[in-house]
Length: 288
Image (cartoon, rainbow, N blue to C red):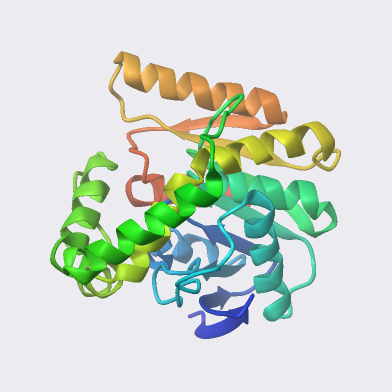
C-alpha cells in the first residue's frame, strides 16, 4: 500500500494541485491538452512499487487554480519546463527525475530535459506531439487576448457548465480503442464544467505552434544530455489506414530525431494510458 498525498503548491503565484505517491526514484507524469491528474490513474499502480510518482495539474486544469484573468503569461515551452522544475523543487525533490509527457506535454518534458539536463534521468514521450518546422500564426498577444475573451463569453452563458463534461467524454471516447472515458465521472464533471478549464484549453491550443517552434529552436541550441535514455511510445489503433500509418511514421521520425528508442503499442488510441497503462509503465520502468 502506497500513501497518496495531495497538496497545493503556489507556483508563479498560482496554487497548483500536486499528488505524490509510491517510493523509489522520482517519475513525473504530465498530460496533454485538456488533461487532468486522474487521466494517469490506471498507470500509477504499475509504477508505485518502484517509483515515487508525481502528478500535477497545469493552471486551470483538474483542481489547480487558473492563471490570472488578465495579464498572465501565455504558455511557452520554457515556461512549462520552469513549472515542472518549480513543482519538483516545491516537493523537495531536487535529484534527477524521469519525465513522462503525453501528447502536447511531450514538448514540455523535452524542453525541461534541454534546459535542465542535470535534473533529467530519462524521457518517455507517450504519443507525443510532432510538429516539424512549425510556423506560428502571427500576433501571439492578440491571439491570447482573443481566446481569453472567447472563454469569458462562453463561461458567461454557461457553455462549460452545460457542455464541458460531455465534450470531455466525447473527446476521450474518440481517443481510445475502447471508445469510453475511463476517468471517474464525478471528477470529470467537477473539473470540466468550469470556465477555467475551457480557458486553459483554448490558450494552450492557440499557442500550440508557438510552443512547437520554440522547441525547434531549443533543439538547435540546447542538446539533450549525452546518453540520456529516451523512449517514444506510439499508439497503434490497429487500423491499417492512411491516418494511422502517417501518425506512426511521425512517431518514428520523432524517435530518430531524438536518438530515442521507438516502441509502438497496440491496440491503443491516443490516450495510451487508458488503453495500455501497462505499456506506459513498462516504458517508464525500462527506460529510467
